Image 1 (cartoon, rainbow, N blue to C red):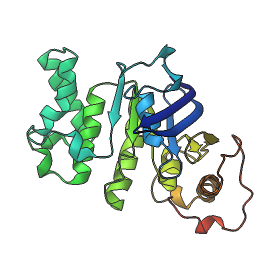
Image 2 (cartoon, rainbow, N blue to C red):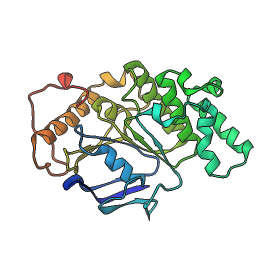
Image 3 (cartoon, rainbow, N blue to C red):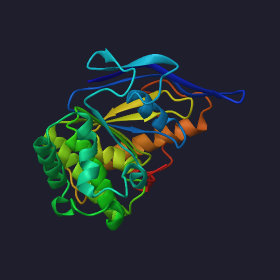
Length: 279
């Protein structure tokens, strides 16, 4: 579904030359849920904006279904971290969810049907007439997810969407995303700085290096389904995968030059049950 080939992004302004992403290559299969994780400031958001056509890469290319992405393509939707800035406070919840559908030129009856279905999917059927500022942060992020779902995307790009909510709400939203992914078969590329979240959510985790960013490792998450917050996180395999990702990120921080793709740090200092959950 998504094919990122040799992606490079350089920012140049006021005489400064900053290479944010260097020679980044990976793929995302149709219907796959892939998490991207890496050190803070490694260029994850820059990468996602290039994938979604919001930024033009300096070199390389992104292909969606084999076609080069040169701008925001149809069939692709975003969910951003700052839900408060992505929802219009003067518009009611239903109107916020409906807004992108107006650009599609859909008849009013179809728009209402999609909005109702999307809000029902995120557990907000009764909130259509409320304003975003009347809802909690977690509920506002559910509205943002509903807006993306109503658009009926083939690909959903999520940029640290749960970073601004509390731990309990975050757990609920993680399970919501996995449930929607199972039900709808959407291809999801999920960026996070939280290692536990990446391992819990993803079918595969792509570990990025420090900036300028390359892929250090692509890790298949072979945890049993269905996953849940109580049993999955205490699985010995969960701890093994979390520790492996953590070691790679720590190695990326220590290294001025990123290690070879697929390399695994041979660090035995920290046992699995002591590895921190986030960078």
